Length: 419
Ligand code: GLV
Ligand code: MN
Ligand code: MN
Image (cartoon, rainbow, N blue to C red):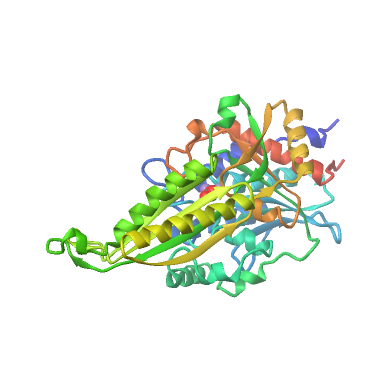
């Protein structure tokens, strides 16, 4: 007797080889990855994906937003597609697992299905989404595919607009083509993503697998304070319009207010740019890149009002002008209950201890959840480290997660072994 679909497992060695190959692209000396969207390293990783699909004998399609989609047809007319994936870009000087694990596992699922001759009722697609991390436009690929990307965010990217233009060109796409990536209604049966937890909850509970219940919404902004450049030695302290002080005041006051009024939520200033930016010049301008996260829209709205209030006060206190660029806005989502159950029972069946938990990190699944049932699997992160070279997940945990992904995909797609 041959094996049944529920006995299928991914090939750990093959997946490890893929993961290690990919980890070398954009590798940094400290064991991390520097692969921001559209950088040379990211383009190389994108090529790697295409080569991997070709090696498997699977057709790859690149859509107008640059998403890679390697599709394995189930051979049935009018079947919908189950998407499996994540992203290959990284934050600057990030870790090897964030995004990459989900893409490598998705490809491995396709390979496993192909080599064992499984009949499915759904097409399977391994997807690599573009710019998940927001070098320019966060969740760009998944929001374009799900038809949720506002034009305004493409017109006002997080990086410089010219750089964005050149970056898109390098990937063979442009600002208009991005909007052609929308999936036709009814073609997507669901989306599943394997990802590292990027926190400590799985380790703390001793769980092998996290079944994600929901994902936070994120809003990001640039607050631009404009003052006056002056000589740092000859301008008395009370005659300055120092844009840097507006920025610093905003950072500290907003932090205080958020901690007091929005317990459990997070607020981060990731960058401040001063111009002209010299020791001996009072800053003329200061641009504060800031984001905050919450799991419901009302709280996000209240946080936005609070931060506007603090920025206005900071500008008044130091005699500055203020403009605000609204950048990324993603909505908080609840992930499909049926998907959660399917993931949990696949984990049970594999003998893996699993817990339900929400995600404080943004993921492509939150864009996909707006157009189809979406589910996410987390595997434990050592010390909770992520967006850092310290990011690490034990290989057995990666394999466990990939097997949960495999078994869930097989059960959703009605898998039968071809005898
Ligand atoms: C994505 O990784 C995010 O949560 O910033
Ligand atoms: Mn990330
Ligand atoms: Mn990620």
